[in-house]
Length: 199
Length: 199
DNA sequence: CAAAATATTCAATATAAATTGAATAATGAG
DNA sequence: CTCATTATTCAATTTATATTGAATATTTTG
Image 1 (cartoon, rainbow over the protein chains, first blue to last red):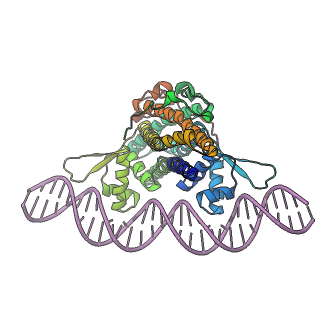
Image 2: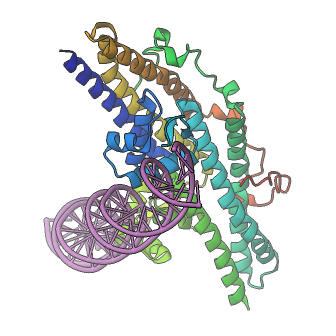
């Protein structure tokens, strides 16, 4: 009968693992890579590439590249275990950290891409808006320039947000709910607090 | 010579269009779809499917599905123009709106997916943590339950964030820079305000 | 309501992304 | 330093995604 218990636990864990893997595609990883993370998230102790390979039924090559992706974003870290020459990996368990560092990276990238384009285009739009021979071209240039300029406020804003996320200042505006040590179980006061499912 | 001016403007515009298209992949659309949005963003007036098709050099079928994606997320809206039976489309020009509604959608989805999984798994983990015959299984169940429970705080938090983004309350914490009418050009006081490029 | 114009769907194809086994490189123990 | 073990890279393949032309459906006008 305890085999049955163990099975039920396994199944429950798998449901969570699938959900986590699924929601991680929003963070720019494939479901397979999300699954690697989720398996590590529930692991009792650091796992090796081969351990993970067995759990997720992927080739070692895929696990290797998947792990690297996860390490690049800080969601997984490598740890050494003496007495074992294999590398061991653990998941960053703090979802806040994962979310925030993902967002910071994404926002900075967006800003960088658009900012570069603005730097390149604005001088010519300025020039054309003032000096183009054809008045129609001048008008168009003026309009485009206004559009481009309008995006500056947005770029400033997302950088504010990114900075607040990086520094942790964001938590002064959106405080972490006052929960107990997440590694130690119950926090019944939080249960069912939010149950509005906006489809 | 004004042909040359017009050309330069065209090129500058294309640089911006490519940058916008590129940064939109973070919002879950392909570069092609991002390009559709960007073309509409710079359009002088509402465009038809055929107009867009010509601009982006895609099939009408692709433009049709791309436009639908953009409408689903609110980044593009359909407008009617009397005297023309074709549908016309315009881009939502407010990047703040686009960003916020994307985030709200993403956060709500993440919450929903994980919440459902928790609802399904927690009863069995509770049960097993208390009642499993094998003490090892009980211990594992207790540990898994703690993990799952630890994610509740995170879910609450991202919902707070989503709500603040939806209501606009977010702007009390991260105010929009005080810029002039974005449709009307210069706001020199904002220029170069942020120039730290964190690689 | 019919006819013409436009939009959408769909099956087929092209393109891009992920996955893999085998080969190479890197690492660590002795 | 050498050998044995582990990790990574890479070219080939599989799988998934995007794109398309043709067919169907929808809409608008008279």
